[in-house]
Amino acid sequence: MEMSYITYESVNDCIKKLFGNSVYIEKESRVHGGDINDAFRLTLSNGESVFLKQNSKENYSFFISEYEGLKALCSTEKINCPEVYGIGADDRTGTSFLVMEYIEPARMSISSQTDLGYQLARLHMSDASAFTKGGMPFGFFRNNYIGASVQINTLKKSWIDFFRDCRLEPQIKMAEAFLDSEQLKKCGVLLGHLDKYLEEPAKASLLHGDLWGGNVMSDTEKRVWFIDPAVYAGHHEADLAMTQLFGGFTPAFYSAYNEIIPVDPGYKDRRDLYNLYHLLNHLNLFGRGYLGEVLSVINHYV
Image 1 (tube, rainbow, N blue to C red):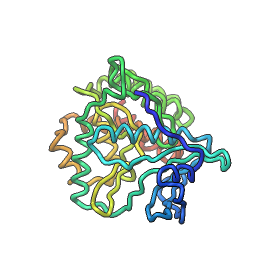
Image 2 (image 1 turned 90 degrees about the vertical axis):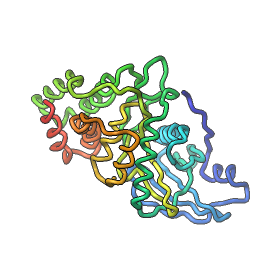
Image 3 (image 1 turned 180 degrees about the vertical axis):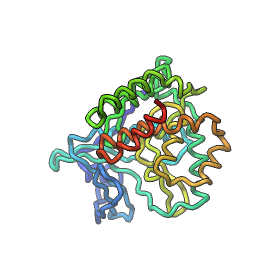
C-alpha cells in the first residue's frame, strides 16, 4: 500500500495552504520531551495552534515514516491519532518538518488508561492486510524507524522468521562492538532456536511498534492519543510487551485490554524476548548502560 501525501516547501507555505493566505505564525513555543527532533507549538493569527516537528533536511525520511505510520493507524478507525497536516523540506533553512494537530496535554486519568486499553486491543483486532501483500502478512510496505534506528520491515510469511530476520538479527549485528565472542555465540543460538520460545499468531495485527509511556497522551477532555509510531504488522504481544518495559501503563489499561484480548498463558515466557529488540536498540543508540539488561535477557533464554 503506497501512500500519497502533499509536501510543502516551507512551514509558512503549509500554514497558508491549510488556513488561508492571511493566516501567519504569531508565536512559537518550544515543546520539550523528544530527543530526536525539535518540537514547537505554533500559535496562529486566527487563534488556532498546530504542532511542528523539525529536523535537518537530510532527515526528511523520519517525517515521511511518521506520516505513513500515523495514517496507517488512523485508517483503522480504532484509535485516536493526531491529524498530520503536511510535511516538507525547506531549502532556505536546510530543515525538514512535519506539521500536525496540536493536542493540549493533561494528566492521564484512570478512565483514560481504560480507554487506552480498549483502543489498543481494538487496533490489534483490526485487519492489517492493507499494509502487506503477496500472502506475507508480517512487516510493512516500507522500512521506517524505531527511534533514530532504521527499522527493517521486509514482508515475511512467518512471524518467527520476521522477528528473527527483521528485528533481532539487525540489532545484534549493530551491537557487535558491545558483545564478546561468547555472548555473540549465545545470540546465534538464540536466533537459531526462536521457534522454541515464540509462536505464530492466529492473525497479524497492526502494531504501534514503539509503545512506551511517552508515546501515549491524554488531552484536557480526557481523550487519549497515540503518537510517534513505528508501525508494522506483527504479533499483538510485541506491543503489549513494550508497555511493560519502561512503565507508565496502569492496571486499568491491562484490565481493559484483556477484556477484548485475553492474555495467553505463555505470554510471560515470551515478553522479555520481544523486549530484547528494544533493549538492543537502546544499547545501540545510547550505549553500554543497557548492556546488562540485554545480557540478562539473552542469558535467560540461552
